[in-house]
Length: 405
Ligand SMILES: Cc1ncc(COP(=O)(O)O)c(C=O)c1O
Image 1 (cartoon, helix red, strand yellow):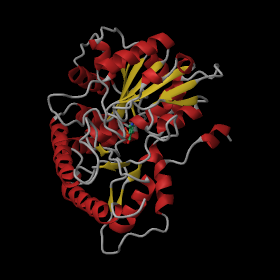
Image 2 (cartoon, helix red, strand yellow):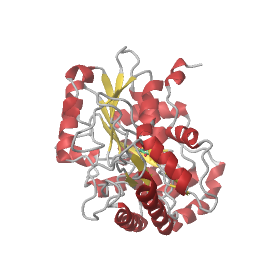
Image 3 (cartoon, helix red, strand yellow):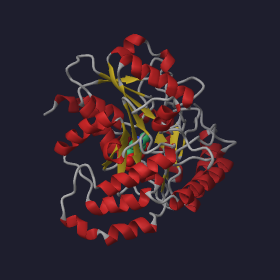
Image 4 (spheres, protein in one colour):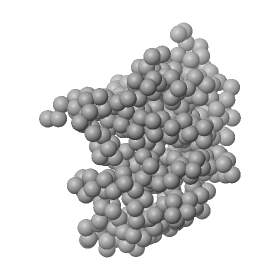
């Protein structure tokens, strides 16, 4: 077997299952899952109708590059969203469909990392989406966990990384809005990141799967493509963005996303994917084109998250240290104590599952930056989410704050 498999860490949900093993919530309560970022909002009807209307397509092999009309729909969305022109981003060379951003983050890493260098490393924020680490390890690289910015939880403190550390870096993952903190990179962050990429010659993989979930309709988060444009860079050199319909359109099961940016990187990535064997089924391509072409359901989706954030933070504001994130659908509060004990006891007493923050981070110079926090995913329906917040409040005020630590 591939010896690198032995380097993989147990996935956070496996660790959560082990933590909850033998712990039973009261029989009287219906359990509520807030540990996983799986949107449970209804799927857009137009997309479902399109999928059904094109079901005959399952009898054909799809092309790895996707159909031209899908790439057109994706490129059109990227141009509208990030203020790009047709010259900035060409549908035929600047975008590729993928089966969800997860597999793309993984496979892109395999395509980019050169094993010729013994020092190959892949940099990532800490805490982070676990695929970055697994992808790095299976590409034969060493993960470089970036320290967290003191005043901006969830964002990497790149100034604290030495030139020597960047030397072996071949690929840098960034995530904005970030999982789990919801923090968003601004133009100054991008300027600094792009300067580093130019200096050290690494590729930036910008995970933007939460890009369409944000509180202020007039202030959508910047992405790597719009940052490149704003900074006057041509051709998105060494930059690619990962987008997904899972969160934007509440379609996690469709497994549909896209990778866009540097055409020369996408050309190599397409070559890799041809052998990887991961073409998107034709009916999914039709459904995806319909989803990328419609913004009405996305606006309604954001509004539902906004209502949930408002209700939940009203409920929890005075008992947990937290704030509404700049993007995404997670709360990332401090819990003043051991996050694993908090999660386990909340499950035992109230039947609400949240993810211990330490499961999403790795030990760094100042410990594990996820410790002492939990990730709460506001992915359920409104009433269920508010009910979960009431139970968390009851747990914190009547049990957690009373227990000796
Ligand atoms: C930061 C981040 N990136 C990527 C993904 C993968 O999403 P998908 O494969 O559904 O597009 C997730 C899923 O939760 C995520 O949290």
